Image: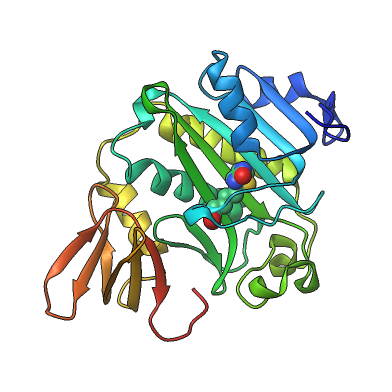
Length: 271
Ligand code: BTN
């Protein structure tokens, strides 16, 4: 670690072991800065860290988003946190990221209670009033499990976002107009992940499916899906399938499962 990247003894005013006990996790690291909390957690996993080990940092100097994009992680403005999931979360690959997104949507809703409903843009962007407030990056460690990285925009004002994100991203405090507790948010996320992903389901149905349907901001919208480097599909989003895939009604009227990809609304709409 380079100078300035310091392991903290306290987080949000309390010793780290207080958070470990409150969240029921084996270990919690908080840093002033790291390159990426996902990278730090991968390092710990290689050294044998136990499932539900948690890493956070005030700032990430090389935060990563999905599809190789950078994730803007300025000091103190957000919650940048990674949680280690056990080997059971490795398969099927579409479901774990979706369920982590669901946990984050619930956590965000808990912190801005009474405000706007919190949606999910498949696979796991968390949306409020048509703008993104949080994202999830799950990275597989093969048979050793999955690193689930969560970034939540908490305190940014519009001009704190880089120009490319203005009008498309927002923060919880901008939405709610009130102070949001990062500790409260982290607790809801970590406990939620522990509860839903200790024994990850291999399909979504029943209550879980009804909740996903209610939060699905793409359903019925015309979309373009970028799959891999060169694949591109167009159609109408037709809900989420039992393995967590996107159901896409193509221009030919056939419903196809999309297992991975980046979705954009075909005409405007900021998604
Ligand atoms: C996305 O929406 O593109 C996913 C963003 C994920 C960002 C989080 S912040 C904590 C963790 N560390 C990273 O480098 N990325 C994830």
